[in-house]
Amino acid sequence: AQLEMLEEEILPAALLAGAFGDDAELVKCNTQEDSRGEDQFASIIMYSSLKIKRKNKTDKLHLVVKFNQESRAFRESVSTDVQLQNEVFMYENFLPYLGIDEEIIPKFYYGVATGGKSPELDVLILQDLSKDGYQVKKAGLSLDNELVILALRQLGKFHAASFVAKQKHEERFFEKVELLREAQWVSKELKGVNASLKPTLEKVVGTLIAKNENVQTLQSFLEKMKTPYEYISELLEPTEPLSVVCHGDFQKNNILFKYDEDGVAVDAKFVDFGTARYASLVVDLAFFLFSNTTSTSRREHLDDFLTEYYEVLKSSSADIQIPQIELFEKEFHDKAVYGFIDCCIQIPTNLSEPTDWEELAVLSPELLHQFHTQRCGDVATSLLCDILRDLIHFKCRL
Image (cartoon, rainbow, N blue to C red; front, top):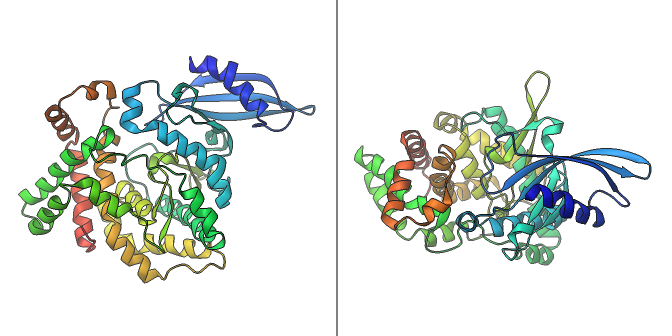
């Protein structure tokens, strides 16, 4: 159905809107559904190659076409309606306003987001970066240090754009911030994708307490997490001066790397801005470092990683004053726990079979709790225990 709609309705509308340039005509379209098995957590993906004619010149464009899910249970569980709305807004409006271009993101061609009114019409068309040699690192959860540093350098540039825009046109910047919608923590009752938080957290903290590790600290953390929504909202509440437009889901599934002939990574670009939000820059940093580096790497290199990021943040902020590194380090210690909370949802998800949201929607609360407890297997539990130990080791606030 999507294929038909793409060729008969969406591409003609995109051409009419000037998405592929003025006076562009479609000569040929060749589309295939996602055959690459990419980790597409929230949407249906197709790849399309178009032959476009413009003023006697024919060009070939390689596109990624992203559709909303058809299943209502899926859309509600993962907030895909809001995610696509955010993503189209980011590509069409906010990212260009921030001056963020193809140095960091794929080229945007066309997008429609109806905010849940007509999900079958939601679509996002972007450049297919794989044709230029960009790819997601598939194997394993952790990245080598050189990839971590490459991603952090790009993240520093991405975040710096918020400092510049905020200081140049504060009012306009915040008008745009107001148009972003929270797509992850959408209700006090942790439903859908968030329902896994409590069972996972209890399992991980329980594992450490059973080993008699940091019992008092962890018991008081569990107490706070009895009202997780409030605790998370407090962590996500933007505090100046270190809040920026965050990617919101900054992990390796959403970072594409490019390698030279010798297999050395030379560039990185970001995709999937559905959970973008205005919050502390630590929200992106901590989630990335906890989900995609090993505990050994963090203990040996955390300072190097943070310094590398901060230096690029500073050098990319033009003549804008950014907060001193001491304030930045304090912010990391105060808010890094958010990265762990998000990992409690994402790491078991990334290590499991895709979730059948239709099935989960009909489970009783007890069975759902049991399902999520079991889904957080030994590997996920061990990785999450390491993150919690590291937070305590680095004296981060819990």
